[in-house]
Length: 212
Image 1 (cartoon, rainbow, N blue to C red):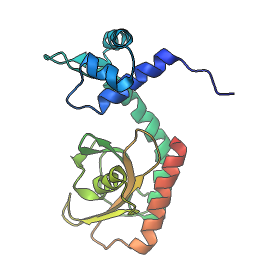
Image 2 (image 1 turned 30 degrees about the vertical axis):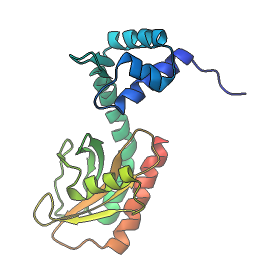
Image 3 (image 1 turned 135 degrees about the vertical axis):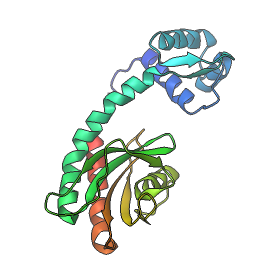
């Protein structure tokens, strides 16, 4: 038998999902049409979500996702970090390069977790919280591979974010609502793609499995 669900909660979540995909906002009538739900029901849902700051109205009265969603999202980041760090540590030790989990924040890549190898004298210092455009660096470009559904397994870059830095990253695929990549970055020497790429791709798959 299928599990029992709350219709009201389901509709509220659908409101947020529809608005998240509507950057210009929607009117009550437009939202009701998208949901195929009576306007009176939508009014009640909107009122409740507004009270929790999960939904806001712009000066034109159009509805948008509210800033309260940011508080929920920020609580997820430590969970992602804790699940990914053991995988990143194994990757960093295996390849002798700094390993990282990077997530999309709008059109920027945000370094959420970073692990440096313990046995090398020199490695790239890549700080948690570092940001850069998704269009630059292996981490961002790997995220874009996942966003576009591109079958390419990984992205490789040289010197795009730091002179002499070389990166290789693979998208984390199959986790609803998450755009992320797992990658490594090193300085100076060439990246042995044939050896390192399979390890990075496997690490990305392991992170996805831990989050599923």
